[in-house]
Image (cartoon, rainbow, N blue to C red; front, side, top):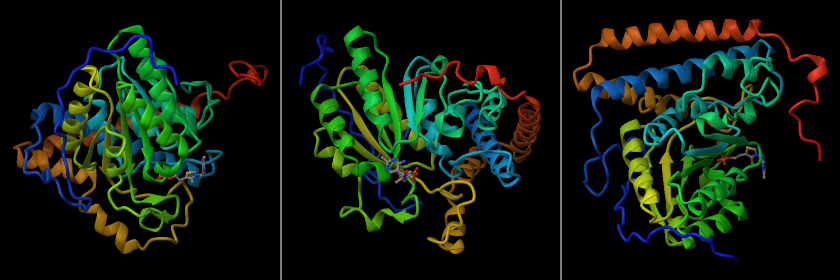
Length: 354
Ligand SMILES: Cc1ncc(C[n+]2csc(CCOP(=O)(O)OP(=O)(O)O)c2C)c(N)n1
């Protein structure tokens, strides 16, 4: 193992992080420390984007039902708090990698819904000209360095980007999102160790939605709190309520500050719940409808809606936002459906042969 040529200034500041119980719905830090309170204007913008992600993904499910989308399509319905809270804590030039379940991260970072839907439909106005599809969202201009269909593969990629940033001496950080099922991939542990040892400016964000495809985490892990794995590698590690955007924003902001200060990686375990199937057309025989319904009381849009009302926002304001987003997403669907197919003559352009 060769250490990076240029190392960051040593910074001994330790982030205290947030430690929470895994059970939803807990929204306050278990250590009693308050999380930061965001301005209502910011929360309203977050609500708008969160609702947009939800509507885009619901539209994609309908398009799949109508057999207009080829291949596997995974939505993150119920995960949006993780994506929005993190996106608002990052700088536009920071790097992000994610899984095949990556629409929410891309839209949270500012991807145009028209081009996102066109991509899933395989049309030429998609951001990858329709050749990447749902599982391969990417847009380097937004810092989106690639979704990945191979469980865990995007994690060392992010560590590599963080290492490149460290060697260049700039202060860009990388964040990588993965599911709890990825924890048991060997490459994850090689990456955790290297990132902690070299103090790479990377954030490992585990979206723990409790199911790895159809298998509950309780059947595959001997420990309940996955963030404890990362502590064993000597890095900061916190467990948070991933459905509360403010809590996510706070935890990721701390992790970002920690990384930019040269203090190394943080592991964030966001407890969340996937309200839709593992992928479109999943028959969901592995969980009950009652279980899903019970989780709706604490899903990210409900949490944020209630928070805004509690802080004085008017219901009409939220209704207006939802109406505007509905129109925007309907227009985006029309745009995508009217976008031309990629020309046959371009079948091999932008494609890398091996
Ligand atoms: C290396 C590898 N092994 C197996 C698969 C098949 N597979 C696709 S999704 C998935 C479940 C991953 O679960 P998790 O990491 O919890 O993420 P989630 O799908 O819940 O977001 C598996 C095993 C794969 N894509 N890559």
